[in-house]
Length: 211
Image 1 (cartoon, rainbow, N blue to C red):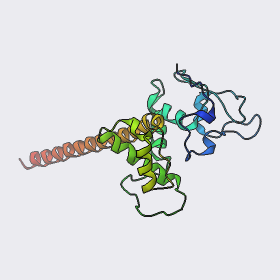
Image 2: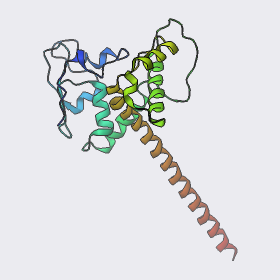
Image 3: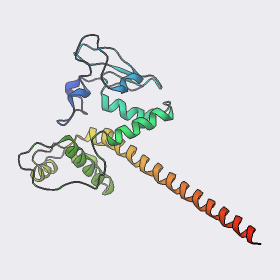
Image 4: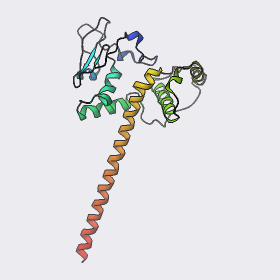
């Protein structure tokens, strides 16, 4: 059972691009948390207004401070007891929640002083993660001041993720997207194989008719 002993203010998963709704899940006393993910977690109100702890109803994993994105990733890839239907639902939700439909589509240009959208920041996060993984770059480099300076020179309004976020949330989310792609590919291959078998059966039938 894992427990995070930290306040929301010091949570390493919090980034400048985080959606406040991830943390403030209920704005009125006695109200239920907003996100559907809370339906799968036991939760109790904390002393911080609008914050809850969380305990997975399937495996019992506990968080001192429940954060929506972390709970979604847990159901999508980490919980070993969640049923397949719920797992699949949250896999697809995590894979598309940042508005990323095609990771190869990313407009490059000078954004000037314009604030980065959450979708564009998420795309940059993923691009950096892929570079680190594919080039075997140590994850600690993400917090190196010289590396951060390079990123700021390229995109002043981009705030790079912490090493903790890079190696947990972002890596887990990317593994979910990869698993979905692999499953889709396997499914297409199986359908293709079945189609070929059907064609051979039809050909065999007609050949027998001609004899």
